[in-house]
Amino acid sequence: MVIAMTRREARDLAFVLLFEKSFTGEPVREILLNAGEARDVQGDAFALSLAEGAEEHMEEIDRMISAHSHRWAKGRISRVALAVMRLAVYEMLYAADIPVSVSINEAVELAKKYGGDEDSAFINGVLGGISRQLAADGESAAGTAAPDAEMPAGAME
Image (tube, rainbow, N blue to C red; front, top):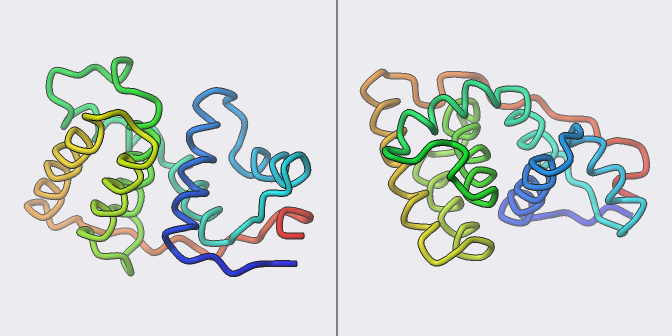
């Protein structure tokens, strides 16, 4: 049975998939399949499209994060903060239907829920810098919205 997720719940799942990927290196679709089998995790097409989109564009996204995380090498950024920012930057670049302010706000909320005491302020600062750069370059959400992802068989059952 498929339970409809809110966008906030779907972002939460997409974050978890990206966070787990930082440990396993597995494709996010495989992580979702395994979670569905092992822990009865409910899948969501929006969550999967966000996670797979961030996964597909990770090198570009990481370059942007590195360029705006002054005095912080990527290796010093917590896995939680990195996963949250990867998700938000993907939305900022490729999800034209999501306002940049919403992506940043949702990222800050995820950081408050899962991160350390200072993660939300750090994430807000980095994403704010990226947002200003994109606005100056005229590139905010320049890509197309993520295509509807097909759910893996069994992930939504």
